[in-house]
Image (cartoon, rainbow, N blue to C red; front, top):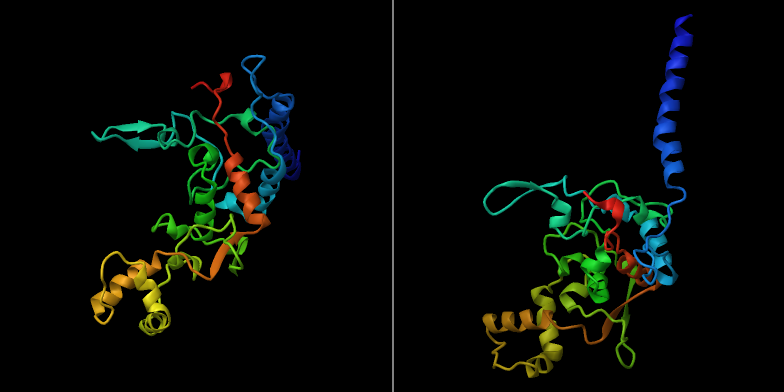
Length: 268
């Protein structure tokens, strides 16, 4: 047998065994997997996404969220952490409350595609809907992540929101963020000295009227105190509201509740 035939057969055997072991056998094992119900009266787990949550999955996929966030909770045997005495332990994902247990194949039977993630630049989102069920928090965090965590490296997804002039009453969907987070999405805005002087000249009396303590804005300290207060109030003339994609993405995040229900195959 010449060397070319040996190389060909070796390559064929390598790819065939990989395909059998990594694709065909798992497919045969998992293709008939069904939602789990402990008792007849229980709701099946998991349940397929519907409505805005289903649309939000597409937004999540299109914006590459899986490149910074995983959706897989590791076993209690993996992921090191250290307790107060310095003793090394495992199960860091469960210690962080990223899930009550490790995730297994049944958690993903309605996921198509399955977005396990490629790295953890941000936290795992497998059960973010359980861990943080606040719709308002997710919107403000998405619009300006630094408003929630000063150290966050997550980019602002301001294109999911519209900053618009208030006409009549504020929208029920308007984000409850102060102007320091809404004027310049992604950053913490602070006016220049000239801009602040212009604001004081135009509406200084109105801003002062909201103060419980007397502030002398003729002094540098007084101007700074009033500015610090003013920055923590919403813009009077503008509001920030989510668009359809922003609403859908938050609905999807709130629907992520993997590793919430105990499964018999997920025991350590």
